[in-house]
Length: 260
Ligand SMILES: [Zn+2]
Image (tube, rainbow, N blue to C red; front, side, top):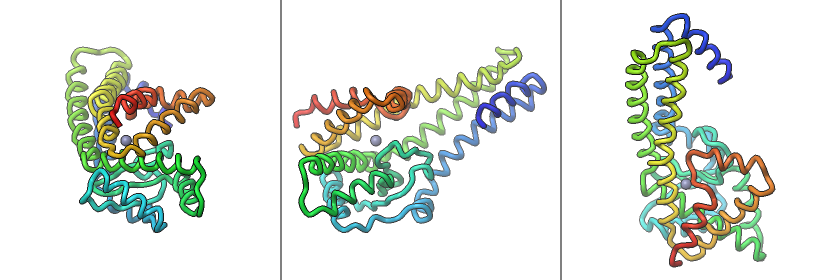
């Protein structure tokens, strides 16, 4: 579908300059609108597409871990598919709005198994430490208001892209130049957001982790991903092309440099 759209834009760019211009500007706006919509409609989306976690043991554990980072904050925990917020299920959990942490369905199923056990193995304890890390990291995103900063940054970058796109009209005038400008500006915009915001938000949420067990869980989580990358090519490329998250090696290095 995307390829088809791009081919269409390339062809039309040689047909009518002003018409194509308007179409590209509309695409900038549309992508911004999608982002803003996800932010404005957090509660509606949560109520419509997600289930509140009711597993008592898991809930008590999650609340306690989040209080380690934000003692007075009331967090609501949900389970459901990430795509309603434009995320894939490669994430284990996501933080949205002011106080919601969403656990992805596959990860929830794994945790449920562990929390239903009477006696835990060493591996289960490791799984819980990773969960501690995930929770303390996600609550960091909430107290840092990362979704809001993301939207503000996206808005600024989009306005800059639209202005530059308009200006580039004068400088470049060859067949396909509109498409080239559009793609280049998108690439630069994504690169800037990745470097200045998204990856910084991840480092900051990692730095906010409070307990020794959560840090141990974080290190294990990164080591697991590094091992997985060696045997799984898809995982390797997914991480390499991930604009929003630093590499596992990078995160591990920072966690290992911590005092606790
Ligand atoms: Zn994160």
